[in-house]
Structure formats: structure tokens, C-alpha cells
Image (cartoon, rainbow, N blue to C red; front, side, top):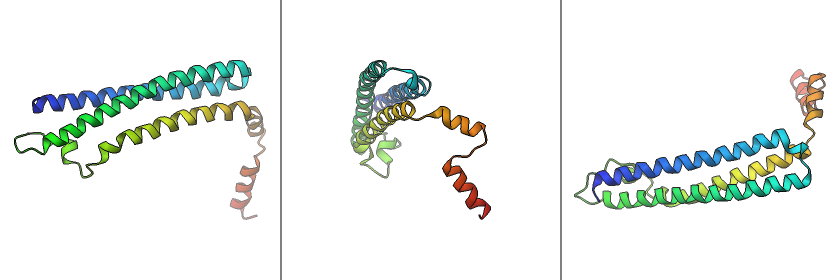
Length: 160
């Protein structure tokens, strides 16, 4: 494979990995938006169906994101290996000149943690919205009555 082909392949994998990750984040934020508007209105059966479908879709997309970044880090490690050879022109590429040569080996772990954090956060957000009385908090705000934490911060600021 020529140096040019390695560089094009590396950029193509990076673009693909970023696109599938952006799609996954769109799914996570769509779930959070749906949770904000619907969680309190759904019955337990509807909530279970929504969470089940979301979990399956999230698992499918997570596997795609992980696979794309796994392939990206693999081609990056191959470029780093080939870039060390004396007869190559790949010395300018990031995997070859990076100060931390182990970054690409740990990229899969970083991506896995990000995917799990996004999934867990969106599920937690669903249950927070479902069980938290947001209407009472809005009413209190509109009447000008501060919550307990707001009242405490007001009294500290006023030197009372």
C-alpha cells in the first residue's frame, strides 16, 4: 500500500468514526428531549417499551461507533509502524509524530467509557424527569418563592 493510500484510508476511517459517533449522540439527545417532554405522561408499560427500544437502538449504534473507532485506531497503529521505516513519507502524520504513542491503543477504552456514560446519563435523565416534580419547581419560581438552596444562597450573599 502506498503512503498516499495509507493517509486517505486514515482520514476516511476518522470521518466515518466521527459520523457514527455524531449519530449516536443525536440518539442520546433525542432520548433526553423525549424524556423531558414525555416521561411524566407515560405509563409504566409505555416507559418500559420506550426504554427497551432505546436500549436496543443504543446498543446497535454503540457497537457501530466502537467498531469504527477500533478500525481507526488499528489503521493509525499500522501507519505509526510503517511511518517509522526509512523509505516512507508518512512522518508528518499524527500517529507517527505524536508524543504519546499509546494513545491509539487506549482509544477504544476512551470511546467505550464515553458510550456507556452517554447511555447511563440518558437513562438517569429519564428517571429524574419521571419522578421529579418539575411543575412545582416552575410554580415556585413564577411566584417568586425561592427554593431552599436559593434562599440559603440569598441569605449568605446578604450577610444575614
